[in-house]
Length: 234
Length: 237
Image (cartoon, rainbow over all chains, first blue to last red):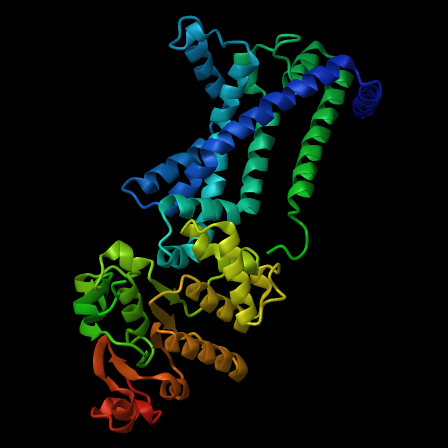
């Protein structure tokens, strides 16, 4: 119990004094995870929608694989990205290992299946509702997908937030590909792991509370912006 | 401008999961006016309408318009039995078919506003369409179908579940369209409505056209005992 109280106190102290290091790693956490979210959403949302709209031969298999990939272990993703980006790997010449870019790549791989899968679930229902109308109006495939994404945007927000939650709280992959280098690739989660290892539980907990607060703020902020809970929108 | 009609169905068959839903049906629809399709539940009215509109893939036979398919498609419209409204405002719903065609925004908006006023939703432009009542939704769906000024309009029981007043408004709108040259093909369960609107009529029974003809002969001097029974309100299967 004392540890938790000390952690709260540490968190307060860090926030009130706007600790330079805390601000730096928090901003890096946000930068990495929001960039990963943006890239993953750009890929996964149209892909998930396409899966709902398009009939093709291996559709069921693709969906099954996608659902399985939602449970992809981050450590393994980290390991594979590491091998790809390491000097002897196929993309070694790019020199990306132990940079925030490498961390973004790993997170995109981790959250894309999650976002695509939730998108597919939501879009399948909307497609069932709109199917006849869009066929009757002779909408092109591109128009069908655009209509579903636009009208289902509130459901897609859930998908994106789930992806963001997984990205910002993820530690296994970014630890491996980022290396937790001070002032370069240290983010909140890797810092927490480090401080815990060092036995500085108060600081680790403090960082933990900051992480939770950050995730909550982002969620609330996006909801407020999009007016999800506003009455009378549907 | 070359006309869309006549529509010719040649031995059209619709089968789903090994079950024949309709056909074979052969039919030519030309001319003008309102064609009413009646028949018991499951007799294939909806399937026939959907097959004509191209929503239902034919398992056999053909449905041909006087124009090539891609041209024919955008010159017809369909109003579904339970209105499909987009999760958007009334204005955006009405504008949607024009948006898909790439109509300039100002033109599409003007047309949508004009139609909203025509169906009595002029004050509800910014209301979410899902908040409308059943009658309002059906009128919205009808206006949205008409906004591309189709040459042929299909309706599947547009006034099922509507009260007298909404039904009358919809019928008035249909008659205006018909007078303006739109060919209307409509399925209905409401025999009063059928008699009020029909120029000619089709009686569907177990997937086939059982009897058809001009309204006067159809309702006044039916030839088949099934149609006579159906018009009398007996249960026909």
